[in-house]
Structure formats: structure tokens, C-alpha cells
Length: 602
Picture (tube, rainbow, N blue to C red):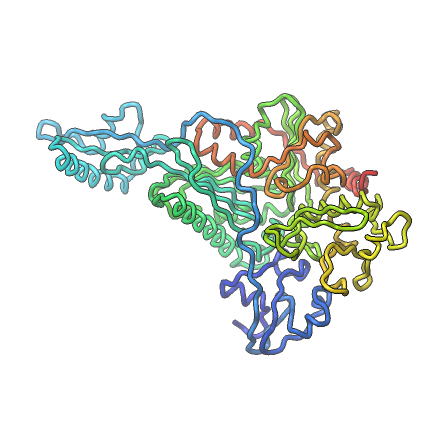
């Protein structure tokens, strides 16, 4: 690597995964490395991320540390298997996949019957208008000869038994013998943070195996805007981001096939649900127009795609279905989620909220559907939070505060390491309820009226900032797990953006939060978010808790439905045409409404 390159770039060039959510801009303070041999100067940002002892021990932010000499560096292991929702709310569908297998026995050609191989197959399947390209015709001839040999060996029968693999009206393969019972597809949810794959038996409609991993594009940023920016600043970034998306999809395809005892060649179709940016990156399309006004996609939908276009090594002619998008910031994952949750099939007033860095919101009001996107920021992913982390072993996902103690629910039942997004919401909600945080979001002082003695000692100072210690590691709060005043502000900004989004959608239809019959919290974060905490901080409307449903990975569920039913694919396309998109960024009153939503409900 060149002299003066950052340790962050050096790791990236050498394929070493580094925890980062800001794309190497020094704002998330996650890219921790320890210089074991050699010397790297302390940058101006390092003291904000490390205590004096850690700095003396060689800890540096990798994106700020420049290598001017040979170094030996310790890189903390990256959690690649975060806790993620792999299933969600779905519906029963009529099993009618685009892929079908038809087993036929074709008569042997004779001097009086000189029909071609393809003609004999078409005549045996008169209900299909088969189209075939050259590679398939090559396989057809081989399969017929092999099928004839198998029949002769088995019973001396005259003819060839083969199985035609058809996607829509396209012949993708002809296999010797009867293989009609082996028919599989893979549904992908390509999320900004997590990628999930589900292997489905298309003959029965049942799931066979599921796997997930952290999106390997994370070093380029935790959110889509940062990743778009990376492609604008580095001409090679788009190719690298596309390759990383392909690697993730292909790795998961291999894992679910291995787990399910399925050969990759038996997977004939894949379906993918992802936001517009993730879809563009996976297809190698320039995402820059998505990041600047007027936010234009290359295409709303993509036809005639193959698995090869997405870097997935399954059957060489496997097809790919990618969900259409509503807009640059309400993508195919939301269309997929709306399909799975039946947002167009219920006359009640319902809100669908996919909480994340970019929060997508759908409102079903009778026979009308409306959608918008709110820029929530990365707080829910654990980024921009001083002790934040992803939902992995050691992450606090739940917090309860009594007069004398703080009880933490930790993923994996291990010692707490950091604060996950659900733990952040839980902690702030509990602190508001306990009087430790006032309506404006300000942490109270230890001597404030009403602060229980058992909690007063947890209100400390770290530098010039006030913090509340959730878990002590020694006497110095710097070394402890805490929530800072800045962290609370980050959560306020995120929840205010989301609340402004659903409030404006409701108001445009003459509705209020009291009219909402159901709130669906979608995505992995929504699966683990406590409804009471969400209501307490004003993240969702103040409705009865039983009306708030954790919908789980509905994007993945929609992708499964698309594999299993052509009717559901048509329904997804109809959703795109029916939903009215509301752009918040050009509303003159957005900022004022956002400010109104910053305070916590009292």
C-alpha cells in the first residue's frame, strides 16, 4: 500500500472487514484498531473515541491513522452475523410459481417421423408456447439421448423420458429422467445493514433453509447516502460495492443450499427485495442520481434479469425477479413488505413503518395508499451513539429502570458491550418515565428533585458532557457503558423525523393518530422494539399497545410470495401503480413540524 494511506483503506484493499458506519469520515468512531508495533500519531478525533490509557496502548481510529512506516496492527473481529429477523408477517398464497417442471416421454425419431428434438418437446407440451435459446437446445439433444438410454436400461421402453424446466414460457433446461420433485428458488432481502436468504421448495411452497449476514458494504457507510457519496468520490467504489453485494448474495445462496441438501443447479429462480440504492448497487447501476434532487432512479422495474446479473451461482440460466420500487427512497423492499402485510387488502386505517436510517412509511386509508420516506439517520443502527453497536452478542436490547437499579437485557446473556437500537429506545423511554430526562430531552442533574438516590450516582460527567451510566466497569465512567446527552439528542432527531412523516400523511387525509387501527413495525429493528417504549418517546402514534404489531422481515416474506405465486407478482406491480408518493423534502412546513416533534410526550 502507498505510504500515508490510512489503516482503514489498507484494510479495505486487503479484504479485511472493519467496523465502520460513516464510510471512513471519522464521525462514527467505530473503526477501532490497535497499533502493536510501529508508531501512529494521535489525530484530533482519537481523544474523543479513546481514553488516555487506550491512546497510550496504541488504540487509534483507523480512518484517521496514516501509516508512514511498517506497522503491525490488531483489528478487532467484526460481527458478521447480527441478530436479525428472518421471518415476518405474511399471507397464504395460491401456489403457482413462475418456474415449473414437466416430465414427458418423447417417442424416438424414425425415418417416417423426422421432427426435430425441439418440435417433439413442443408437441408434448401443447399448452406451453416454449421459447428456447441455443444453450438450451444443446442440453435438449444431450438430455434426450441420455433419457433414451435410461429408459432402455430400465425396461427396454422406446422413447426418452425427460423433464422440461420452464420459467414463464422460456425453456431454461431439459434434464434426463423425471426430476419434477426437485424444484427450488431463493428469496433474498438485500438490506442496507443485513442480508437474508431463504431457500424455498417451489413444488410444495415450504421453506427449506434460511441464513443471514451483515451487509459487507458496511465499510462504505451505514446508510445509503454515505454509500452513494462513496461512488461519487471514488471511481472504483461502484464496482467494489457491486462486487460486495454479489459476494453476499452468492455466499448466502451457498449456505442455504448446503443446509437444505440442495445442489445449486436445482435453484431455477431467485427473487430479491431491496431499497432502490441497494438494488442499483447490486445491478451495477450508478446510484448518484438517487442522492441528489430530483432523486431519479435508472428504472422503476427490471425485466428479463438472470441470477448471473446479481452474481448468484445457481442454475446457469436461472431467472431473477427484482421487486419494483415506488421511488428513490421507498424501494422494492417496501413494496414487498406491503404485499406481505396486505396493506391493500384491509379497509382499516393502518400505518406501516420500516424503521431504519431511511424510514419508509405507508398509510392505508380505506382504498387509498400513501407513502413517504423520512431521514431518520443512523441512531437506530447503533451508529452515532457513543456506546452504540449492532444487535449482536453483548448488545443491550432492553432496559428497565427502578428506583434503585438498572436492569439490562443483553443479547446472548453475556456481559454488556454496547447499546443496540432497541436498547437505546428502551433506555431513553425508561429514563423519561423515571424523571431522569425531561420533556425537552435534557438529562437532569444528580441533585434534581425526585431523582432516587440509587440512580443519582449514575448521573456523571464524561469530559464536558453529562451521561447516565447503564453499566459500570470500574469507577471511571469513561470505561463504562453509558448514554450521553448527545446520544439522547440523536434519538430525538431520529424519532422526530419519523413522527413528522406519519403525522403529515395522516393530516393530508384528515386523520389523527387516534384514527389508526393498527401500526406495523417492519424490519429487524421493528421486530425487537418494545411497543410501550416506542409510544413513550413519541416514535409511533399513542394507540393501544395491542394495536402495535412487530411485523418482522416482511420484505423477505414478500420475496418468498413472489417466488411462489405469479398472482402475487401481479399484485406487487399493482401496488406500485396504486400508491401515491408524498415527498417531504419540498414541504415548506417540514422543518417547523419536525421541531414540534422533538420533545418527548408528557
